[in-house]
Length: 286
Image: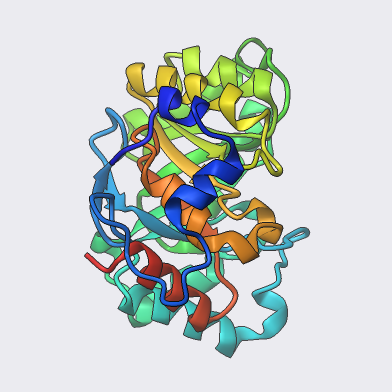
């Protein structure tokens, strides 16, 4: 069963948890939903990827993250395990310090043609965005970046303020340097603007059953996401576990996301191989 806004409105988060039987002793994959490695289409982009992706930005800033701080060998082992488990979507950003690790992974054990690379820029100036994209290509050692996003938009008027930067992204797409462009939203007004913008191909959106670390309460966000789907946007869910706040409710949160027909993929920040195994077990392998 897939969940739409009307289904959600009938239940509080607690009622959903009870209905799903959260807390069962033996986690099992959810029936009739996308599995971890199901091939999913991102809206009207023509781009496909696995439903479950690996995020690399846990507690990240200044080109470092919780993963980089655990050391190079650990970082690469987690990337390799994610790839071996069938994950093909890898979410990065300039501030995460992830590009060099994913580059080395593609030289070692990843097939570049089989993975979706997403990265993000905090730059809002067009010239700086152009410089960022060129540097990202060099850091990743790839001719094409699949998804390039403006990171952490927090102003509802961003489409009117960032015309030059948007043009730079559009030009890169026209030249085949990126396959699609979009935004990562951390503000409800910015999200609403993204949904209505013809420029936006994909949106990275915060979503979970409890409204934890989201742009607005869940029952307000869901109709906006439905509208985004109607407009052909590729929607990728983040903060599925509320940046770890909902870690003790993994089963409920994963099932909630998997049952949303307006979410095409999700990204989870994994810190070790056991977390990957748990997510794949809950969502199902294929």
